[in-house]
Image (cartoon, rainbow, N blue to C red; front, side, top):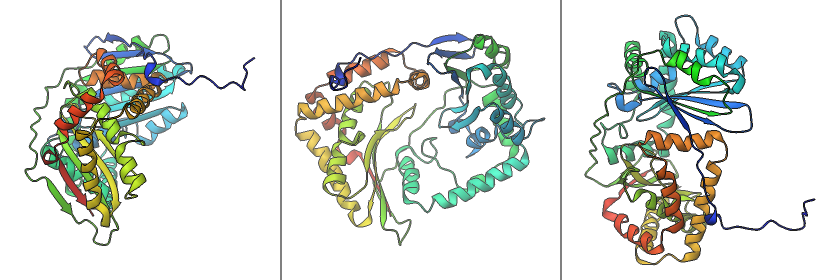
Length: 424
């Protein structure tokens, strides 16, 4: 029997060997790529249809998001109620999400029911009719939600900092207005659906305990429609010339939203994986320098975080927090002090070991289950990377030196290259 008086051996996480379970890929009759991961102990699975149909492809604001949202709200023969009731009867979830480059329709269900539900997903996507009454409800709800959000300083800050970084016409920098929602036309959604869902690029990701015949059922339905690769969007980044902004959004507010950011390359840049280590140490976890200083020592905020934005074409390094309006400027100065410290003072090995263990431990958690593993693969595939990206990143976490991190800090922590925004 297990002797519970003896504690388990504590092992350094950075010594663990990480393995990314391989996916199997097939191509349907029409060229649609399908990635399959048969794993897990529970009889559940997830199918994700990822379309090149994000807001970067729209000609009018809000069209991509509205098309994606309303795709399951009615067909020629079924109402939104009928569709929702069908999936709920089987205890399944049919969800959707729209991003800058891609739009997703995802099915989560019991493995044994996938053969019955996948044809229904095909019907929903292929025969979406975008009823006028559903569009009217969407417009009303979106305008009401926007009006509420515009009163929140953090929401306004998130919109504005992206515009400063990328430009108001860039898919990452543009934002929706009440007028955009009000002017939406049903025919715009129909045209967008035809071009980018029915005749655009689709990739399918299937994970979980997969039933026999899943490949054939996908080919029988999604292998029959027209599919092609969309042209790459010519992203033109036009950042603002001014770099310091102070915006009053609520004259009576007691808190301000702070964003400090700089443009940054995408995952194909040789510094990307290395900077992920530097970012974690700087502000990427609860034990980071920004948290220790600005939350724990100064008490200016409940939390402060830094991160690299999860974009495909280009990215940005972002520092985000909310603080009392009387200490916003002091908070910003402390951020720059931490940048200077990383440029001028060597990182001790104990702190670097803590960061290594945290990052490796986080990856281990991300590999716990088929859905999480497939999420890793989606990130690799959609960004045009290979499996080696995962293993190279792990190697960098384990081997990067304090001197390399200091050199990266000197390269990227130059105050004049960072945008400052405070919305109060």
